[in-house]
Figure 1 (cartoon, rainbow, N blue to C red):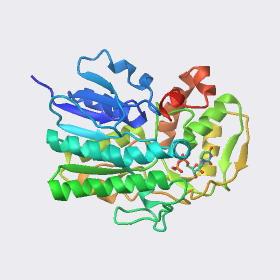
Figure 2: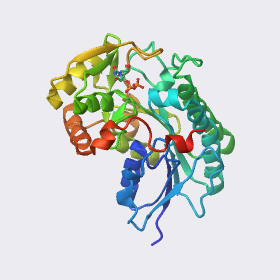
Figure 3: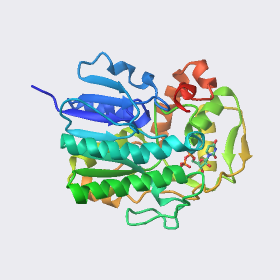
Figure 4: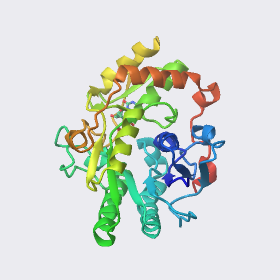
Length: 329
Ligand code: UDP
């Protein structure tokens, strides 16, 4: 029987590669697309031998062509860490604007359902806590995070416009901090930063006084939420994340305990516009999708630490993207 085909942009990235695994497991034909600026082929290498997996090395900010039918499109291509936005701000803006335009156009031609990866960053430095989908956010468009936040906000607006004007079948997931194996060790995000520092024998860098909060969701829970949303008939944004909130200082202490490192915590200045608190209100996901996270931080961190420990020393000390020079002009 002919398999249904799904296109996953950012398919070589952290979340994208886990989604590729999930759709292969569900019996789909998966086409992963990635320009490999921040994605890495090692995340999907195990899938290349699979007859129902294809990889397109392509930048979705330029015209996207995929032959044949596409049942679903999942748009997960984008730099996704504050360090990335600083290094490649224009690519970040382009993938969230030109990229989404190309993919919405593709979805129209192919009559596909399209799910786009949005983010808790649409809430900016939130003045409402926890953040429900009805909250409009507190974003500084001209600040360092503006390139990501505004691209994602534009992406939501564009998706809703295609839904209302072209009756396109759309889904929007607002992803809160998610972690797990295949995160990039050098992406600057707090979890790979702390674990990388512990493994290299460096002190752990807490930004500011560490009283800012985040709520970390394990990747298998995130993928389950995304899958259920795609299969639902709901086209407004849905938060997917784990409401278990923790301060960054407590988080650093947890990582010290987990890794057994003898290093200490040192303070670094708090980056501009760093959100002071973040916690998803997941009432909507619970009611609509019957979804809630299952993996505790203790379990998830253990698996993630084992993954980072298994990486080569080269990767542990590599400071930049593998393909940075090649793609960023
Ligand atoms: N952070 C930190 N030390 C680091 C990296 C990050 O204290 O080495 C803090 C950062 O200031 C933020 C939080 O950890 O308050 C989460 O940062 P991350 O870059 O993971 O993503 P964000 O949730 O801010 O998008």
